[in-house]
Length: 601
Ligand SMILES: Nc1ncnc2c1ncn2[C@@H]1O[C@H](COP(=O)(O)OP(=O)(O)OP(=O)(O)O)[C@@H](O)[C@H]1O
Ligand SMILES: [Mg+2]
Image 1 (cartoon, rainbow, N blue to C red):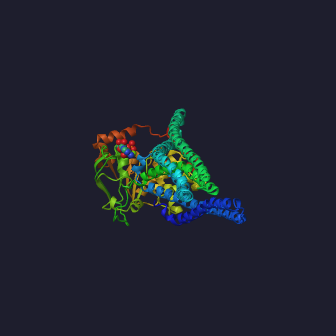
Image 2: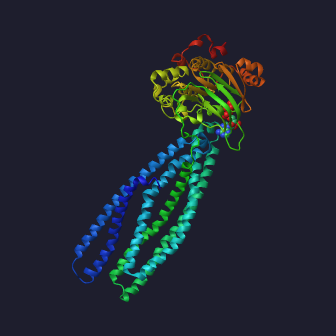
Image 3: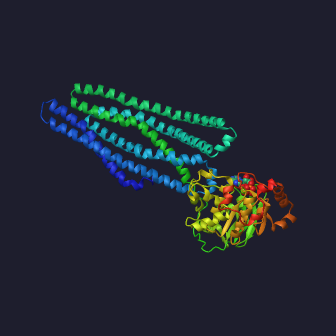
């Protein structure tokens, strides 16, 4: 296992300590033999010397065991940490499509529970497997030395254990894999319930959710019971066999002593040594179970490691130092699955440096899909996307993503401070730049949060309103002034008044930036130099808003619906008095009536 290799030195130290402890503990019965056959039977001297030796051996064993535990503990937690870090780094490299395919609970349980199982085996099971095997071989050799016939009884007793152990190994592996998979499913339920708690409560689903969880937990319990039964049966056998063998040895040994082929001291030593085999044999069950759990865990973790990131730097990928922002889609087609329908089918679109193009299309027409191809969140399945004439797949990912700023339909924030969320893509941004980005996105409310920009927002930014989150996500995208901006419906959650203000400020930012902006409202279309209409997987027309309105009934149908919609978006974004008074006070649109003035009027 490559993860154990860096800890070779510790393994050696641990092996040496373990061997020393083993020699010490197995020498004690031989000292006992010497005491019985010497000072006790023949009333010879030397009892104190032998007792002193036994004491020294005991002390030595204790010390060596202590060293062994310490060294091994360090190695085991080291292995655990290394695997966990590598797994997380690998998860970060894997493309979006991987994360869409995998349940998050499965990944969570692999990154936590399964790695812990591996640590337990490396830090406990593995060492006992080695120590117990060594003990077994060494003790059997000593037994053979003491009395061959009695030792033979001990060896024969091993055969049924080997047979049953082999079956146990196979069955237990299968059962524990099932348990671990189901633990992943259960984690998924908990995780989804935490994320979707509002929906669950709003729809009064908590009872049903509880029942769904209880059902899954019961399934997990019955799977766990399979492992319990397997353990129970195997452990019973492991308890029984050494006792049967012991009975045979005591009987046979008594005869041997009577026939004077074995001394009494020899028999006592033999029995004492044999008793030393009972623990290694009995613990075999626990160790094998642990080994199988760890091996199922390794299997589960390596399923993730073995997934190669298919969106990565190609050999010879170049860094794009100076980017003018010339973005081109050339015959781009895309489908989410190999056998799935083509979401995009021959998209051609040329966006000149500094130009802003609004992307309009019916819902599910592929707008989000198209713009996700620019920073390579997904790769085209046909054609190519170029930036400054270079296929984006030939540009180093870091370089490409450094030039492209993106805001998503779902504005995701992390459980970190507002500032950390903002500077996600531009860690070196100055306060002035942050201020400018917040101003443009009309996100001045951030300064009025209890701790200003240092206020921590909750997981997914849930402590903020939808419109607040969206404006922070927009500020994050434009911070650092990327050459290319791809914005997915960036103003959808804003009321018309705030929207107008953002648009005005955004127009200044967009004037020098190449931008592809998905828009749903006629008002936002005004931001663009040109509109591209996506229909049936391709761009069917480009032109000015008025040209398309005049010539394209499908375009008119989509944007006309929006015009008919109520002019006021009363969603979760209502401009608040303090917000208006603060950094986002009235700017250029001061002469326009505010929405409540409109409704009141
Ligand atoms: N991760 C995915 N896996 C499989 N199919 C997907 C995935 N994401 C989107 N699709 C499908 O691809 C098509 C285009 O989706 P896309 O999200 O690009 O539409 P859109 O134009 O952005 O729609 P909207 O205006 O509603 O945001 C849809 O039919 C959708 O079901
Ligand atoms: Mg979309």
